[in-house]
Image: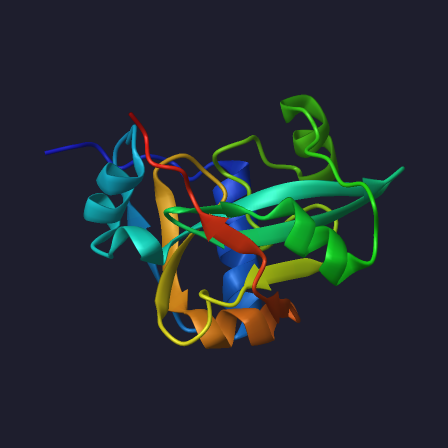
Length: 166
């Protein structure tokens, strides 16, 4: 039997934000995972129901969250077109932590230290999804449609299938 762990500050912020949103959710805590398939199995969802929250830099001091279903990657041309910009980039890990309060692998719009705009890929809505909850091995299972509403997300087709790994 494993000892219960004390929630991290990040997990506490994320869970408090989920509760404040009124969004029905189920918190799932699991051990370390090293792949999308392991994360999905630990969270009892399909791989395409695991949401990665990526931080994207639009300009100086201007960031946004992009919710990407498992097995997919941001389509930079689609995202640039949606946002009406010619350049986007991914900040390094230190900047991502500075602008969200979360380290990579734990980032979520829920409880972020700044309420950046959210873009959700169109495949997030319409089914249960599992999104990180502010700490490694902690996730929240939510209704994807209700999540995008709670976050005020722009919903659009902004991803492509991830390339096959050799």
